[in-house]
Length: 153
Ligand SMILES: [Zn+2]
Image (cartoon, rainbow, N blue to C red; front, side, top):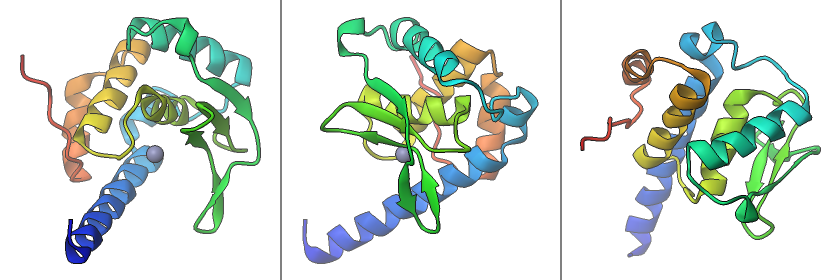
Protein backbone atom coordinates (compact mmCIF):
# COMPACT_ATOMS: atom_id res chain seq x y z
CA UNK A 1 0.00 0.00 0.00
CA UNK A 2 1.20 3.51 -0.76
CA UNK A 3 1.00 6.24 1.87
CA UNK A 4 -2.09 7.72 0.19
CA UNK A 5 -3.77 4.33 0.02
CA UNK A 6 -2.99 3.72 3.68
CA UNK A 7 -4.44 7.07 4.57
CA UNK A 8 -7.69 6.56 2.67
CA UNK A 9 -7.96 3.06 4.11
CA UNK A 10 -7.67 4.51 7.60
CA UNK A 11 -10.24 7.23 6.87
CA UNK A 12 -12.65 4.63 5.50
CA UNK A 13 -12.24 2.38 8.54
CA UNK A 14 -12.83 5.33 10.88
CA UNK A 15 -15.98 6.15 8.94
CA UNK A 16 -17.25 2.57 9.20
CA UNK A 17 -16.49 2.57 12.92
CA UNK A 18 -18.39 5.80 13.52
CA UNK A 19 -21.50 4.54 11.69
CA UNK A 20 -21.48 1.26 13.58
CA UNK A 21 -21.13 3.07 16.94
CA UNK A 22 -24.02 5.37 16.00
CA UNK A 23 -26.11 2.36 15.13
CA UNK A 24 -25.27 0.57 18.38
CA UNK A 25 -25.99 3.65 20.47
CA UNK A 26 -29.25 4.62 18.75
CA UNK A 27 -30.80 1.47 17.28
CA UNK A 28 -34.51 1.38 18.12
CA UNK A 29 -34.68 -2.37 17.53
CA UNK A 30 -31.85 -3.18 19.95
CA UNK A 31 -33.52 -0.89 22.50
CA UNK A 32 -36.91 -2.46 21.96
CA UNK A 33 -35.31 -5.84 22.75
CA UNK A 34 -33.67 -4.29 25.84
CA UNK A 35 -30.16 -5.27 24.77
CA UNK A 36 -28.83 -1.92 26.02
CA UNK A 37 -29.72 -2.48 29.69
CA UNK A 38 -26.90 -3.04 32.18
CA UNK A 39 -26.58 -6.62 33.42
CA UNK A 40 -24.25 -8.30 35.92
CA UNK A 41 -20.88 -9.50 34.59
CA UNK A 42 -21.85 -13.07 35.56
CA UNK A 43 -24.77 -12.90 33.14
CA UNK A 44 -22.57 -11.49 30.37
CA UNK A 45 -20.00 -14.26 30.83
CA UNK A 46 -22.54 -17.06 30.84
CA UNK A 47 -24.27 -15.68 27.72
CA UNK A 48 -20.88 -15.16 26.05
CA UNK A 49 -20.07 -18.85 26.64
CA UNK A 50 -23.29 -19.94 25.05
CA UNK A 51 -22.69 -17.62 22.04
CA UNK A 52 -19.12 -18.94 21.70
CA UNK A 53 -20.42 -22.51 21.44
CA UNK A 54 -23.78 -22.14 19.70
CA UNK A 55 -23.31 -19.17 17.39
CA UNK A 56 -19.59 -19.39 16.60
CA UNK A 57 -19.18 -23.17 17.09
CA UNK A 58 -15.92 -22.62 18.98
CA UNK A 59 -14.40 -24.80 21.69
CA UNK A 60 -14.33 -23.45 25.23
CA UNK A 61 -10.54 -23.89 25.30
CA UNK A 62 -10.12 -20.65 23.33
CA UNK A 63 -12.84 -18.69 25.11
CA UNK A 64 -11.58 -15.16 25.94
CA UNK A 65 -11.13 -13.82 29.47
CA UNK A 66 -13.93 -11.42 30.30
CA UNK A 67 -13.69 -8.90 33.09
CA UNK A 68 -14.77 -5.52 34.38
CA UNK A 69 -12.33 -2.63 34.27
CA UNK A 70 -11.93 1.07 33.58
CA UNK A 71 -11.90 0.55 29.79
CA UNK A 72 -9.81 2.49 27.30
CA UNK A 73 -10.10 6.17 26.37
CA UNK A 74 -11.91 6.77 23.08
CA UNK A 75 -12.42 10.47 22.43
CA UNK A 76 -13.72 11.86 25.69
CA UNK A 77 -15.16 8.68 27.15
CA UNK A 78 -13.98 5.33 28.45
CA UNK A 79 -15.01 2.38 26.30
CA UNK A 80 -14.88 -1.38 26.50
CA UNK A 81 -12.33 -3.20 24.36
CA UNK A 82 -10.96 -6.52 23.22
CA UNK A 83 -7.24 -7.03 23.76
CA UNK A 84 -5.77 -9.14 20.93
CA UNK A 85 -2.58 -10.23 22.59
CA UNK A 86 -4.15 -11.26 25.89
CA UNK A 87 -7.37 -12.47 24.24
CA UNK A 88 -9.48 -10.67 26.82
CA UNK A 89 -12.54 -8.46 26.87
CA UNK A 90 -12.81 -5.60 29.32
CA UNK A 91 -16.18 -4.00 30.04
CA UNK A 92 -16.04 -0.30 30.90
CA UNK A 93 -18.52 1.21 33.37
CA UNK A 94 -21.88 1.95 31.77
CA UNK A 95 -21.25 -0.55 28.95
CA UNK A 96 -22.12 -3.81 30.69
CA UNK A 97 -24.78 -4.64 28.20
CA UNK A 98 -25.47 -7.18 25.48
CA UNK A 99 -24.79 -4.80 22.60
CA UNK A 100 -21.24 -4.30 23.88
CA UNK A 101 -20.96 -8.03 24.55
CA UNK A 102 -21.88 -8.90 20.95
CA UNK A 103 -19.46 -6.26 19.61
CA UNK A 104 -16.46 -7.37 21.65
CA UNK A 105 -17.19 -11.05 21.03
CA UNK A 106 -16.97 -10.45 17.28
CA UNK A 107 -13.51 -8.94 17.83
CA UNK A 108 -12.57 -11.98 19.93
CA UNK A 109 -13.99 -14.16 17.13
CA UNK A 110 -11.25 -12.71 14.92
CA UNK A 111 -12.71 -9.70 13.12
CA UNK A 112 -10.42 -6.76 13.61
CA UNK A 113 -12.23 -4.09 11.57
CA UNK A 114 -15.83 -2.97 11.61
CA UNK A 115 -16.46 -4.14 8.06
CA UNK A 116 -19.46 -5.98 6.61
CA UNK A 117 -18.25 -9.34 7.89
CA UNK A 118 -17.99 -7.87 11.36
CA UNK A 119 -21.54 -6.56 11.14
CA UNK A 120 -22.73 -9.87 9.74
CA UNK A 121 -21.36 -11.72 12.79
CA UNK A 122 -22.71 -9.14 15.20
CA UNK A 123 -26.20 -9.36 13.69
CA UNK A 124 -25.92 -13.14 13.81
CA UNK A 125 -25.48 -12.89 17.59
CA UNK A 126 -28.41 -10.49 17.93
CA UNK A 127 -30.69 -12.77 15.95
CA UNK A 128 -29.55 -16.21 17.13
CA UNK A 129 -28.84 -15.49 20.79
CA UNK A 130 -31.38 -12.74 21.44
CA UNK A 131 -34.11 -13.41 18.87
CA UNK A 132 -33.87 -10.03 17.20
CA UNK A 133 -35.43 -10.04 13.74
CA UNK A 134 -32.71 -10.05 11.07
CA UNK A 135 -34.90 -8.37 8.49
CA UNK A 136 -35.74 -5.53 10.90
CA UNK A 137 -32.05 -5.22 11.76
CA UNK A 138 -30.94 -5.08 8.13
CA UNK A 139 -33.62 -2.48 7.32
CA UNK A 140 -32.47 -0.33 10.18
CA UNK A 141 -28.81 -0.87 9.23
CA UNK A 142 -29.58 0.63 5.83
CA UNK A 143 -30.68 3.90 7.43
CA UNK A 144 -27.25 4.08 9.11
CA UNK A 145 -25.54 3.19 5.81
CA UNK A 146 -23.91 0.18 7.40
CA UNK A 147 -22.26 -2.12 4.91
CA UNK A 148 -24.31 -5.06 6.03
CA UNK A 149 -25.03 -7.73 3.45
CA UNK A 150 -27.08 -10.75 4.26
CA UNK A 151 -25.04 -13.86 3.52
CA UNK A 152 -26.21 -15.55 0.34
CA UNK A 153 -25.83 -19.31 0.32
ZN1 LIG B 1 -14.88 -2.50 17.79
